[in-house]
Length: 127
Image (cartoon, rainbow, N blue to C red):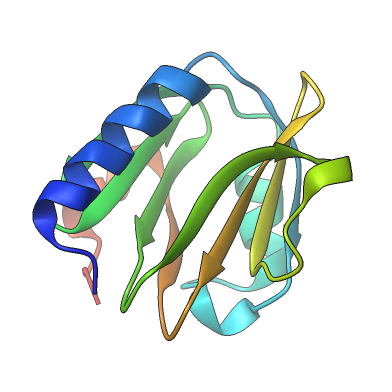
């Protein structure tokens, strides 16, 4: 299970690499990690520009112009910025960006990727 210092570092690394990127598409390979149906998740975040990334406890909050992506790595996993040509074999979610890079997310045991509208972050249940 990732500890808080690792989550803080990961959020910082993600902020440095991802702020300003536009989400061009999303591929969901493990729908059970989502809090909304896959179609809504994809529709809600696609086209959004990443504005900020912070950690909130063991969650990583990715603020976009279309809402929040909230990530919890559960028992561990990988968040990798790659190209489609260098995707790892195992992944649960792929976020394609306008610059031809993509974010590959793999949860080792359990993990969450939640969508929350911009005006509903304070009501989101962190479960």
